[in-house]
Image (cartoon, rainbow, N blue to C red; front, side):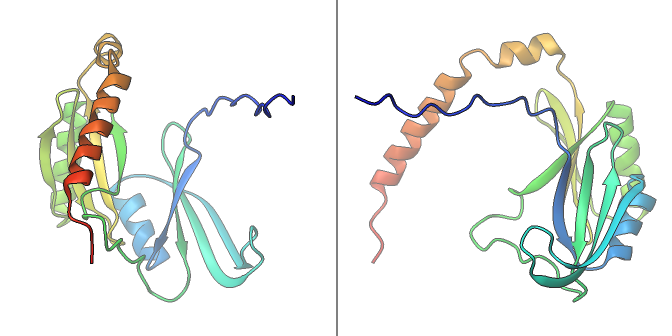
Length: 183
């Protein structure tokens, strides 16, 4: 009898390198992320062919660096088109949450965004952190977060976490089973 194939062990994933999204216009995006949010333009790539697939698609790829070294990155495909929103997902679901160091900084950024005419939702209290929400010029929802809980509280929050997820999965299964079949 053959032993089941063992997969290699997972390696440590050390953090975010970059999150990439489509943008309508590289300069408009640069202005928002660099001039308003304060993230420096860190890297620029101009190419006509996609390195991973080889397909022809002229583009500019720009990166904005955060203090931890990770980046937010954008592709301008040269057609002034935004990424289409997901038709089955509410606008509040998909978002990028970025950390600031304090509630004072969170409030300062709220004031700064509003001074630039950007609509801001919040401050929202999530019990372990507070946050504000707004959209970039590409329709990407952003969240700025200020942590309230310390490491000990966050460790305590993990108690029973798998059981909580299991209960959610059971509740969801019951709810889905009660829904009428399509057609």
